[in-house]
Image (cartoon, rainbow, N blue to C red; front, side, top):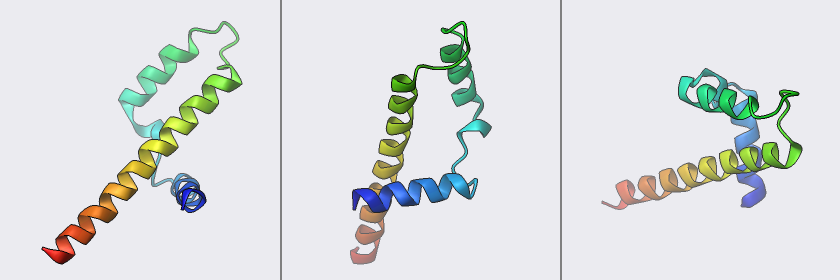
Length: 75
C-alpha cells in the first residue's frame, strides 16, 4: 500500500494536480528556507525530509478521503 500511495503521489505531481509551486504560502516558506544557504541549494537530507513530509501529508489525506467515502457509503 505504501508503494501504491507513493506512485499516486508521483502521478499527481506529474499531472500537475498536486503543485506546491502554485501555493503562495508554500512558496514563501520555501524561499525563506532556501535563503538559509548561500549557494541557494538546500542540503540533500533537508530536501529529502521536505519531500517525505509532502508524501506523508498526501497519504494521510488520501486515507482520510477513503475512510470518509466508506463512512458516507454506509451512513
